[in-house]
Image (cartoon, rainbow, N blue to C red; front, top):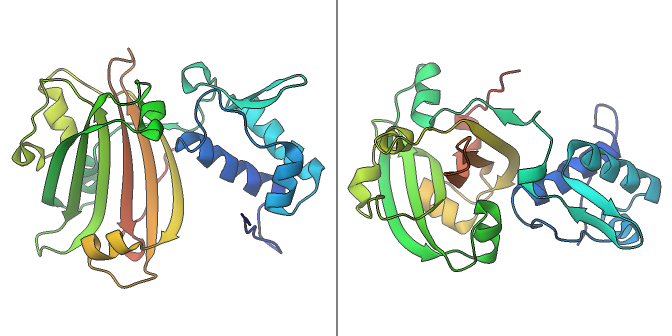
Length: 245
């Protein structure tokens, strides 16, 4: 495993780039709650940097509340429920509302819903037992001309009140959830760039190596009674991500 780091004038410090990569592994669920991360020397080999650089990256995540150290045992992922970090929480709004604020009207071009068993990754992200029933929602979003520019894969712990009829998910998901008095209050997100996979090429009708913006979004209600995880994919040159500070 070789991780490429940007170098040269204008690039972020190496430790900051590594911290960003480690942070994503935690937020995306690649490293689960309580999991021990690779030793510092292994991370030095992976990123091709000094131990001092790795230690600075880990120190940053410890300060943020993503990691904690146990003497003579190693460094572990801290449960999100115990994390003190708030800097990366953003105002929660639906994609439909987000686009309306930018003066764009979008619609759902296709929606597929099915009931699946929670994998190890999904169970860790949603805080449920592995194998629990999860609602998987796949939606393609676009404009009136039928051209897709976004693809969302959402996972929600299943309850019988949620419909298994795809037609019920063509509107705003959050408007649908409001009918059950479910209103989200917290959202934690992470964004990365990648090239279109074969699946994305087919769904978004784009050629190989098209730049894609991936937005991993974890949304929850303040009382912890609702949580969802969404992997959102946007065609790179057709979407801008705005941050409010």
